[in-house]
Image 1: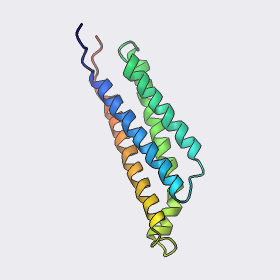
Image 2: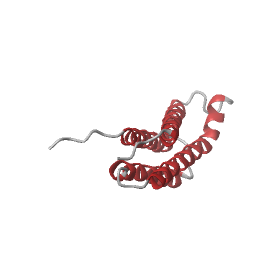
Image 3: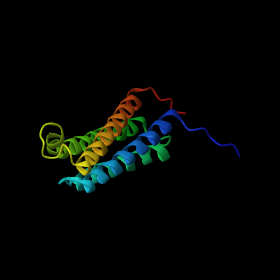
Image 4: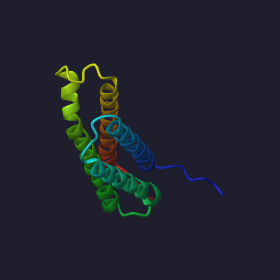
Length: 142
């Protein structure tokens, strides 16, 4: 029995799911560190849905019609962008306190929370780029 190599789509959606999961973890830790995010359940739901869609494409991508696969990839882009925008919206106040005033500029806990949020935004952005590249690349269906 030979092992079938992973397709390009499978590799990219797997990497995308890992990036979204890492960004989700960073977002939750940042929220629990200082200035909790008010819309954290929405962020978690969007990330979970994006990861589930990535896993569906990973495991059933070869059996899915091309249009359905593209729809799932598009939904991943929308969900990841929503999660990233929710995190940015929740961290604008903290960024203002740290970078533009003296209120929290010397608080190491607030600075750590902001650094985690910045890392999460970078991970979301990389996941978005990866999903967009994956959606626009040509995929051969056997």
